[in-house]
Amino acid sequence: MWPLIPLDGDPAPEWTLDTPRCSGWTRGLSSQESYALSLCVSAALPLLCHPPPRPPTFDLLGPVTDKFTESVYVLANEPSVALYRLQEHVRRSLPELAQHKADMQRWEEQSQGAIYTVEYACSAVKNLVDSSVYFRSVEGLLKQAISIRDHMNAAAQSHSPDEPPLPSSA
Image (tube, rainbow, N blue to C red; front, side, top):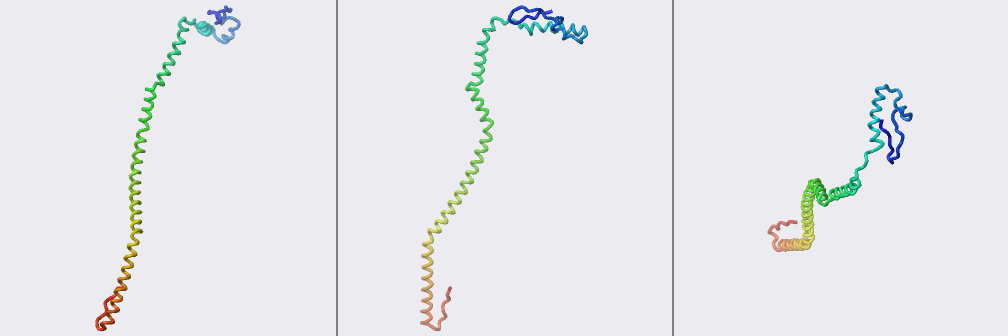
Protein backbone atom coordinates (compact mmCIF):
# COMPACT_ATOMS: atom_id res chain seq x y z
CA MET A 1 0.00 0.00 0.00
CA TRP A 2 0.99 3.60 -0.60
CA PRO A 3 2.02 5.57 2.41
CA LEU A 4 0.35 8.86 3.17
CA ILE A 5 3.06 11.52 3.45
CA PRO A 6 2.14 15.02 4.58
CA LEU A 7 3.03 17.88 2.25
CA ASP A 8 5.41 19.53 4.69
CA GLY A 9 7.77 16.57 4.31
CA ASP A 10 7.49 15.19 7.87
CA PRO A 11 7.14 11.43 7.78
CA ALA A 12 3.82 10.07 8.96
CA PRO A 13 2.72 6.55 9.78
CA GLU A 14 1.59 4.60 6.77
CA TRP A 15 -2.14 4.41 6.33
CA THR A 16 -3.79 1.69 4.37
CA LEU A 17 -7.30 0.38 4.21
CA ASP A 18 -6.31 -2.17 6.84
CA THR A 19 -5.32 0.37 9.48
CA PRO A 20 -7.88 1.01 12.22
CA ARG A 21 -8.50 4.55 10.97
CA CYS A 22 -9.65 3.29 7.52
CA SER A 23 -11.09 -0.10 8.32
CA GLY A 24 -14.65 1.23 8.45
CA TRP A 25 -14.57 1.90 4.73
CA THR A 26 -14.66 -1.74 3.86
CA ARG A 27 -17.43 -2.84 6.24
CA GLY A 28 -20.17 -4.66 4.39
CA LEU A 29 -18.10 -5.17 1.23
CA SER A 30 -17.16 -8.51 -0.23
CA SER A 31 -13.50 -9.40 -0.40
CA GLN A 32 -13.39 -8.61 -4.13
CA GLU A 33 -15.03 -5.23 -3.59
CA SER A 34 -12.67 -4.52 -0.71
CA TYR A 35 -9.71 -5.46 -2.87
CA ALA A 36 -10.93 -3.23 -5.73
CA LEU A 37 -11.45 -0.34 -3.32
CA SER A 38 -7.98 -0.94 -1.93
CA LEU A 39 -6.49 -0.71 -5.42
CA CYS A 40 -8.39 2.50 -6.21
CA VAL A 41 -7.40 4.17 -2.96
CA SER A 42 -3.82 3.00 -3.35
CA ALA A 43 -3.66 4.57 -6.80
CA ALA A 44 -5.35 7.84 -5.77
CA LEU A 45 -3.65 8.51 -2.43
CA PRO A 46 -0.27 9.53 -3.84
CA LEU A 47 -1.92 12.04 -6.13
CA LEU A 48 -4.31 13.46 -3.54
CA CYS A 49 -2.00 13.61 -0.55
CA HIS A 50 1.34 14.20 -2.17
CA PRO A 51 1.09 16.21 -5.38
CA PRO A 52 3.97 15.93 -7.83
CA PRO A 53 6.83 18.31 -7.13
CA ARG A 54 6.82 21.59 -8.99
CA PRO A 55 9.44 21.82 -11.68
CA PRO A 56 12.00 24.59 -11.27
CA THR A 57 10.58 26.36 -14.33
CA PHE A 58 7.26 26.90 -12.52
CA ASP A 59 8.73 29.90 -10.73
CA LEU A 60 9.59 31.36 -14.12
CA LEU A 61 6.10 30.72 -15.48
CA GLY A 62 4.38 33.13 -13.08
CA PRO A 63 5.74 36.28 -14.70
CA VAL A 64 5.29 34.75 -18.17
CA THR A 65 1.62 33.97 -17.54
CA ASP A 66 1.13 37.45 -16.10
CA LYS A 67 2.65 39.00 -19.22
CA PHE A 68 0.55 36.70 -21.42
CA THR A 69 -2.62 37.71 -19.56
CA GLU A 70 -1.71 41.38 -19.88
CA SER A 71 -1.04 40.93 -23.61
CA VAL A 72 -4.43 39.25 -24.11
CA TYR A 73 -6.09 42.09 -22.21
CA VAL A 74 -4.30 44.72 -24.32
CA LEU A 75 -5.22 42.89 -27.54
CA ALA A 76 -8.84 42.60 -26.44
CA ASN A 77 -8.98 46.34 -25.82
CA GLU A 78 -6.87 47.43 -28.76
CA PRO A 79 -8.21 50.36 -30.80
CA SER A 80 -8.77 48.14 -33.83
CA VAL A 81 -11.06 45.96 -31.70
CA ALA A 82 -12.88 49.09 -30.59
CA LEU A 83 -13.22 50.13 -34.22
CA TYR A 84 -14.57 46.67 -35.03
CA ARG A 85 -17.16 47.04 -32.26
CA LEU A 86 -18.04 50.48 -33.60
CA GLN A 87 -18.41 49.03 -37.10
CA GLU A 88 -20.70 46.31 -35.74
CA HIS A 89 -22.83 48.92 -33.99
CA VAL A 90 -23.05 51.08 -37.11
CA ARG A 91 -23.93 48.07 -39.26
CA ARG A 92 -26.73 47.11 -36.89
CA SER A 93 -28.17 50.59 -36.39
CA LEU A 94 -27.64 52.09 -39.86
CA PRO A 95 -30.81 50.69 -41.51
CA GLU A 96 -32.98 52.07 -38.72
CA LEU A 97 -31.25 55.45 -38.90
CA ALA A 98 -31.66 55.54 -42.70
CA GLN A 99 -35.38 54.83 -42.27
CA HIS A 100 -35.67 57.65 -39.72
CA LYS A 101 -33.86 59.99 -42.10
CA ALA A 102 -36.23 59.10 -44.97
CA ASP A 103 -39.25 59.63 -42.67
CA MET A 104 -37.91 63.00 -41.53
CA GLN A 105 -37.30 64.12 -45.13
CA ARG A 106 -40.84 63.11 -46.10
CA TRP A 107 -42.26 64.99 -43.09
CA GLU A 108 -40.12 68.01 -43.96
CA GLU A 109 -41.50 68.03 -47.53
CA GLN A 110 -45.07 67.80 -46.22
CA SER A 111 -44.37 70.56 -43.70
CA GLN A 112 -42.84 72.79 -46.37
CA GLY A 113 -45.95 72.29 -48.52
CA ALA A 114 -48.23 73.17 -45.60
CA ILE A 115 -46.11 76.20 -44.70
CA TYR A 116 -46.26 77.43 -48.33
CA THR A 117 -50.05 77.02 -48.35
CA VAL A 118 -50.46 78.92 -45.08
CA GLU A 119 -48.11 81.70 -46.20
CA TYR A 120 -49.99 82.02 -49.49
CA ALA A 121 -53.34 82.23 -47.66
CA CYS A 122 -51.94 84.84 -45.26
CA SER A 123 -50.64 86.97 -48.12
CA ALA A 124 -54.05 86.72 -49.87
CA VAL A 125 -55.83 87.89 -46.71
CA LYS A 126 -53.30 90.71 -46.28
CA ASN A 127 -53.84 91.79 -49.89
CA LEU A 128 -57.60 91.79 -49.29
CA VAL A 129 -57.16 93.94 -46.19
CA ASP A 130 -54.86 96.28 -48.11
CA SER A 131 -57.37 96.49 -50.99
CA SER A 132 -60.18 97.61 -48.68
CA VAL A 133 -59.12 101.21 -49.41
CA TYR A 134 -59.77 100.58 -53.10
CA PHE A 135 -63.10 98.88 -52.37
CA ARG A 136 -64.22 101.93 -50.32
CA SER A 137 -63.16 104.19 -53.14
CA VAL A 138 -65.11 102.11 -55.70
CA GLU A 139 -68.12 102.07 -53.35
CA GLY A 140 -68.00 105.87 -53.06
CA LEU A 141 -67.73 106.22 -56.85
CA LEU A 142 -70.68 103.85 -57.36
CA LYS A 143 -72.82 105.85 -54.89
CA GLN A 144 -71.85 109.03 -56.68
CA ALA A 145 -72.69 107.48 -60.08
CA ILE A 146 -76.10 106.32 -58.80
CA SER A 147 -76.80 109.78 -57.40
CA ILE A 148 -75.84 111.41 -60.69
CA ARG A 149 -78.06 109.00 -62.63
CA ASP A 150 -80.99 109.73 -60.34
CA HIS A 151 -80.46 113.48 -60.85
CA MET A 152 -80.27 112.99 -64.58
CA ASN A 153 -83.47 110.91 -64.57
CA ALA A 154 -85.23 113.53 -62.50
CA ALA A 155 -84.02 116.31 -64.76
CA ALA A 156 -84.98 114.41 -67.88
CA GLN A 157 -88.52 113.81 -66.61
CA SER A 158 -89.03 117.38 -65.71
CA HIS A 159 -87.95 118.67 -69.19
CA SER A 160 -89.77 116.18 -71.35
CA PRO A 161 -92.97 114.80 -69.96
CA ASP A 162 -93.82 112.74 -73.07
CA GLU A 163 -90.59 110.76 -73.15
CA PRO A 164 -90.61 107.53 -71.12
CA PRO A 165 -88.37 107.48 -68.08
CA LEU A 166 -85.07 105.66 -68.28
CA PRO A 167 -84.98 102.34 -66.48
CA SER A 168 -83.32 102.56 -63.12
CA SER A 169 -81.32 99.80 -61.57
CA ALA A 170 -82.09 100.60 -58.02
